[in-house]
Structure formats: structure tokens, C-alpha cells
Length: 351
Image (cartoon, rainbow, N blue to C red):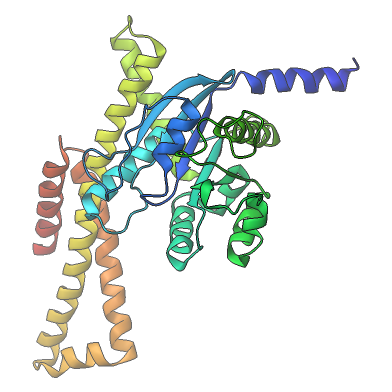
């Protein structure tokens, strides 16, 4: 074996030992949790068909599957739009922290059905959180494979819709199909067999990992979270010498989620209140200076007036965000962060 072949062989061996973090993405009801259970070979994830609730939070489970160490992250209802802003925000924080330092693969989960505007909107929302760079780490997995006409491959189904075809093309042409209900007992080498399809999915994850030289997807947010995670782990390690690395990391993730929720609560409160007070201050100043209410009408009805209001809101937003962040750093809970942030912004406005 020459030097280059030996290096390639050693690289592949190292990549093979990597515990792959795989994130399942998609709207509620497409079968993410069922797909996760099928990949794991047992019911480790709770299947939930309703919108986000305390019992449908994102979860991470790790297991050796087909000789590979797999960590599956089921994002549950992260991409639902009919949920409370606070619960959705908390769930996004939890999901992103679970992904740190970053996933090796994204599995975008869709049903074998018409690719509607709603599905397209979910895809757009996914890239808002992770960016389109994530596509080189992604594959599309279709559930409800029994809906495929007999003898049809998933590639044929994809080719019938241009939007769907473009999505799969952006993911390197990687797509698979599974049926969590009807394909359980089929022959292992049969296309309509979960065993066959799981093996194909895992081979695709291997190829994605190899193509990226074993590196995981990351962005600025994930990098910051990973840095914070390392700091938390070191603090725990120094104070708890008897804990295993896995226990240390689990505790660090819990602490970091709580810390981020507090920071987000304070910052969001500061941003909203700051923007509101910035506009209110501008309106009040205009009324006083003009000594008549027509000044307000001018602000609202003219382009320059609306631009002035927008600038006032932006300035208030930035200042409020800074004050909210600083106040949150001294809080012990999200509720306390909200209270401290509100007080800080109001005190600053009163000066």
C-alpha cells in the first residue's frame, strides 16, 4: 500500500470511529419520531402528532446501529408555527444546544405526498436556523413509502415535482424512502423493506461524513455554544472529579440551556420594550416641539416620517437589547431576567 492509499485508509478508519450526530428536521406529523425509532430498531422516541408541548420536546438518543455509534436528535415541533413564542424559543435553544458542536448529517423528513407551499415554507424556515450551507450535510427522507405506486422508486416520485427535484438536487441528490408502518417485516433485500432502507440511509450518512472529512456542520451560533459548553465542562470537571466525560457533558448541556434561556428572555424583553419606548419617545418629542397633534400624522403618513420612526425603533431596539442582556446575566431564571430587563430599560428611559 503506497503512502497516499495508507493515509486514505487511516482517514477512513478514523471517520468510521466517529459517533455521528444526526438531526431530524421537518414539521409535526411527517413521521420524524417514528423514523428515529425505525433507525434505532426500538421505540426510544415518543411519537407525538400534536403541536409542541412539554411532552413533545426535542430529544437526543445514542445507540450502536449496524456497527455505527449513532446519536439521533429528534427536533419534534421546532418548525411548527402554531405554538407560543416562548415555548418555541425555548425549544430552539434546547435543539441547538443538543446539536453542539454540530451535526454530521441532517435528515429532512417529508411525506410521500404533494409538495405544497407549506412544505416549502418549512424548508425555508430550516435554512433560517442553519443556513443553506447545511445542504452539503443533508439528505431527504420520505416517510409513508406505502403511498408510492407499486414498482416506483423514490427518485421517480421526486422527478415529478420541480420544487422537490430542486431540493433533492441541492442535497447532492441524496434521498431515501421508508414506511414505519407497513414495511417492517419485508425481506431484508427488498426495496420496500425498512431494514434495507435503514442500511441505505446509514450508508448515505457515512458518505456525507467522509465527503466532509469527518467534520460536522457548524455556524457562528453553534461555535459560540460549543465554546460556552467547553467552559461549563471545565468548571464541572474541576468541581466534580468523579464524574465521567459523558456525565460532565450532559450536565454542561443542561446548565447551558438554562443559561441561554435566561439570556434570551432578558435580551428579547429589552429589544421589544426598547423599540417601543424609542418610538414613543420620538412621537412625544415631535408633539412637544410642534405643539400640535398634526406632528404625529406627519410622522406616520410621510416617507421621511416613517423612516424617522423606524430609526427610533432601531436605536431603541439596540439599546434595549444591550440593557436586557446585561440585566439577564445577573438573573437566576427567565422570569427574573424579564423583570430585570424591563426595569433596566424603563430606568434608562426615565433618565
